Image 1: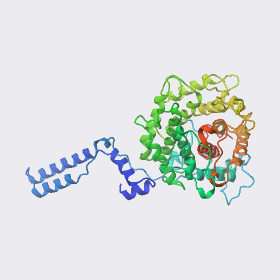
Image 2 (image 1 turned 90 degrees about the vertical axis):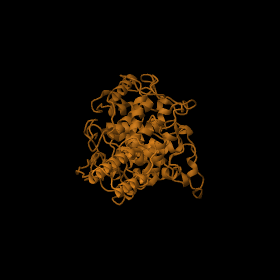
Image 3 (image 1 turned 45 degrees about the horizontal axis):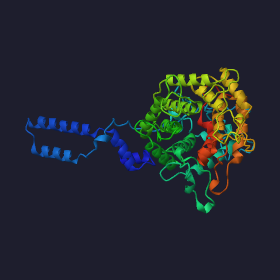
Image 4 (image 1 turned 120 degrees about the vertical axis):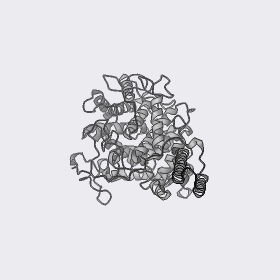
Length: 511
């Protein structure tokens, strides 16, 4: 493949990046040896066993021109050329007007009508690689990954123009506050602002979580169908993914294992890389996604789940939720995942769920969500059902139908009684809860989803900042806001508003 073809195919990657990646995968020494053996055979054939001097000199020149290659970059065969994305042919689907809860101020000038567009709702089982796979990857390529292309046309399934404009502003803020190395610096992002717009942003997060918040930021762009080849933010995505690739160690772990709870960073990094590969099927990301998903499995405790270290015998529902999402995203991208990993995760969720109330606990059955020291009174655990939401989503991704599973139904009832409300005095702000609650209730669908969706939009859209360097972001309020910081809060709220076209429903229509 010519350099010009590579430049067009992998826009945003430098020539050196592409060259190194391809050299790493190409056995040049073997190819060179085979060519020279062939030349020798031809010489003998045409000269009766006596090499012709001119032919011999030509062969020597070719050998001398063979570029030297360092041994360590010769590892695996060259990847197949990426096929051009297939054109996605969408079957017209009539939209049920009763379930179209868009705002009255939507106009055709802002966004197209959803009538006649694909609804991105899958009725296939979890193992299917259909157009709407288990978690709805798509956008960068055709076939199994066509789901996100044009997804913004479906914003009317949420809150219409208001929701989509909030997403656009969130992406713009994230792009402006990306570091030059491609990361999102949890405690130093504000330095990337523009002093001409006024005060730089506040809201520092924990410096140990750069990999995690960078992964969340990338998921926002990928969720909107932005890749390193397509979209408004190609350069942003390309630089972010390159930085994330460089953060992976030889075992496949994203981030430093010296961080006490490094599994959070790894799970989110693996999730982002798996989605990037699923969207593009690019060989630039394949090995990194595969190693990341493999390390997720390596960290799981046999017959149980995950916690802060690699298979150390301890388990908690919070880390396990991110790990299950990484595994499911990897499987949807075509990466091999041992099916028993989902069975073990489901066993843990069953163990942590109170059979009477449907509440899922953290490390003990049915206990309320945990809080950092000093946050228990400010943000009471009684105001949140975050781990119940995690449990619900894990059940769906592990194969349980919301329409048939009694624990999912009980969980939906609990979430319906604690809808998102931005009330700092009451202590009800919990963006982590709202993120998982939005994913879980979207899978449930029906009346529970309609109530949640309305409350979620009401709670977050009006709270998005619109001033100066803050414009497009959300203040890092809530139980975990200070740990994650402004990048974390902005990414989670953007992801909530992307749920309408980022994910497909696993079972049924979910009306």
